[in-house]
Image (cartoon, rainbow, N blue to C red; front, side, top):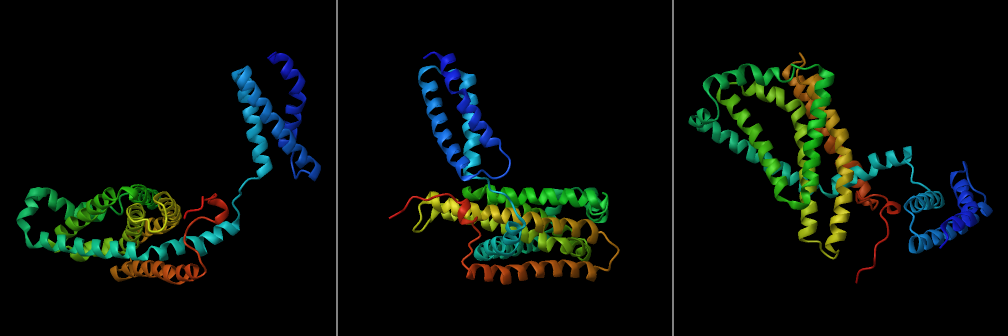
Length: 331
């Protein structure tokens, strides 16, 4: 093939396709037909060049031109406020409600385990010395635990807490398909809380511990348990897919889990604000804990009202049908 002659013979078609692909506004019917016709021609040109004289620069140029034309012909998916409202009102609460048995079970088991570990630690004070020296214990219960919530500027502290908790939640969902890493993350998190709580309780600081941990901790730990429960549901979709193939089961549960992960970003933002501005505030203990109770109650109300209504309408927490792609029929 004489490549120079080939380019000279067809460059006007390539230029026209580029012009149609770059045109602002809607194409007319005739222009749309012309775009599709030129797309097919240029695809043929690219195939011939690759077969007979694969010049890398020209191949890359035509590939880019075809990608641009394909994007223009099929249109783009844009985010609108309707999508945001649908996510907040239907997709996210439906995903939470549909997986409620998983994350509520995770919540209950972890809270029970935390109290059992804490109570055992209080009942067996001899193990305290194996963890910390007396000086370190004194520093923790009389200074470090309470100062942790006020040693940073509230705004930066809220952002730090938000990103850290979002990261833990994301790990629970990302490792969900493997199962065991989620259990490990949960155990290390609960063990840390239980041991600190046990130390504070054993030294007569239980009211300080609960007064500082409960305002933000109720909703914060609930969000982590939601992420862990949803992650474990992905794992179960792989173990027991039911009538679906394993790929379909993991795909459906994984897409719903991404909805949960995105929604939890907002939930954890709220917990970060509470932890930065309410927990270290001068409000009385009952008022600070009351803020945490209201936030937790609002979350459960959100799940069991909007979530239940959305599921009754047929929502599953999965992405919209137009965004899922096509599925091959399964017998």
